[in-house]
Length: 161
Image (cartoon, rainbow, N blue to C red; front, side, top):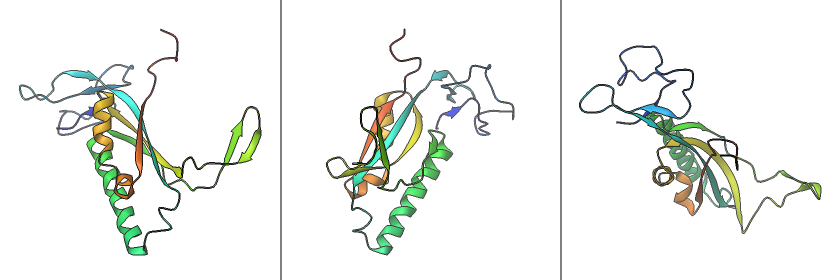
């Protein structure tokens, strides 16, 4: 059974349509246990998946292959949203863009680093960095030699305890 954020209703886990918890709902989930319909409350962490792939990936795909690839993305995102671990997903990013630097101002790229470009991102919830990395293993960007960077968000202000 997949975890569900407290702020969202999960009919298979909760008996009512009312959200559980107090006003402090961030990063808490309810996990159904075998002994009861509502088990323990677990603190979840938020992570960012950043997709990278070769800058020519889409140019090298045949139209039918590209269509199948996009269908796999739609399926993966839909399943992650339905399961509750994927919070939101970006649409694909174009290669073009601008880089803003404190010293150099605004310039055209380079947005390509070692042949890889950032293709998009999703925000997810998982118990640990390792469990988030396991979720990232299903990402379709990996089917074409891409990579997924898995990064945790700070729970508080960085550097302040």
